[in-house]
Image 1 (cartoon, one colour):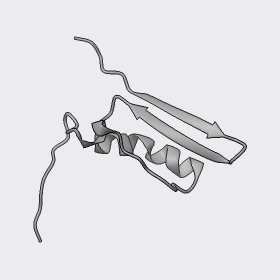
Image 2: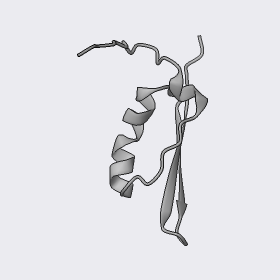
Image 3: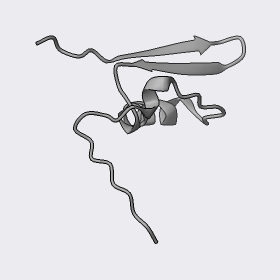
Image 4: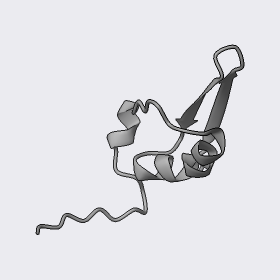
Length: 68
């Protein structure tokens, strides 16, 4: 069985002093968890765009629904 590979790419735009982070191989909340420290180190998040894979259920993560 092939191992699943996760790739995190950081693009820095030194002219505009911006950075973007792209994640491949992680779905849903695992993606956010993987980039949390990077985002904190790079500064304020001004925009977040989710790929279609974000809405897939991550393997090994239990999703629960609660009601108040």
